Image (cartoon, rainbow, N blue to C red; front, side, top):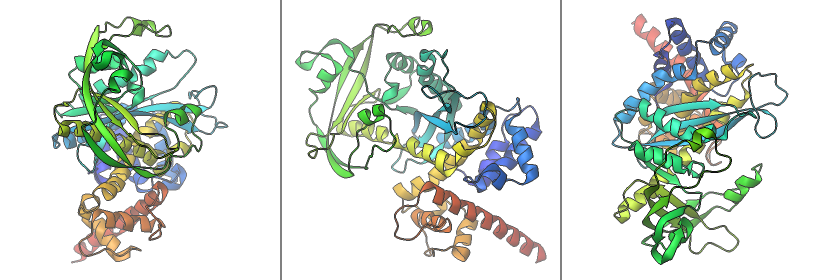
Length: 467
């Protein structure tokens, strides 16, 4: 479970700054912002606190790595309690109003107030996919002179960074199609890193596979079904997605799909350098071949008019048994957690509405909100995937007492994690039987709970003193 807000503030207050006053300031800022994650800075902070927060975010001695140093160590300690930890990697685009006056931001394609962030999120390798903390954060801007190879190499950099932050923990790195890169595979294997990565490219094989296949797609087509599994598919709409996103992930209706699963081993041939590769990338000494295991997940009989499910997963994990193969599939399916994490950051924490004037201040604020979003995600994820867990797995005893005394939704005598989750959402305005609450509703409810809990604990303290 992610830490409660007070311990989260304590985590960040142990950040390694040259000046201990900066660590104390960080702790106080986190306590106030975490209590009201969706509010703007002026609404969440007093005038004096607001001035101090702006000075903190704009201080040249403050960096995201220093802000997160205490959280990284606390995340490592939580990871050491797990037999295996999934480190899920992905990037997100952070948009700000184009009419803003922020300095130092870059473009998305041609224009805009934008920067990007690559995140490594540590998640427990269990059915609940419990978020354990942020293991790495790399923000960057895109400019005309940005070498494309540097953006591509961020995956390798984050693997190294997360592995260093989480030293001594047993890690499996999980990535989506964008990470399908021969240089990355080589880097991971050379460093003895375990991984599951979805394939995007139809790579050349070193030797002919069964049936005379010379490329990956032809070899994958020969994989035999060894087990079937049913899986729920969520609805996907075009909305504001780009043409490329619509092509990669077509719209679909929600349904339950019957999926076939099989596996094989292949040996890839080193690709030729691409004409657009940077000099740095061309200079890499890559092995002439790499052997990897391949797990195919496909839908043999999709409903008429619906795109079939098709995953090709490249991995270092064993495929010796059906259990091994299904474990690879389940570990890749955990990748959705980081998509939910980005929603918690952008919507629950309202990050893209932050009114800071320059890139350095914005990335420092991002580092403050990164663990807060992880806490919101833990509350929601546990309620969804392990609803019968005791409520104490997501809330403190004081918070549960407050919900019993002042909540809008009664708690049963022995509440579950889902009972607690819905009670918190009710404080934010969620109506019973209206489906799961959204991120803003949850953030508002949690904000109200923290405010009530502070008053509750102060009253308890005063009562004990009077006695």
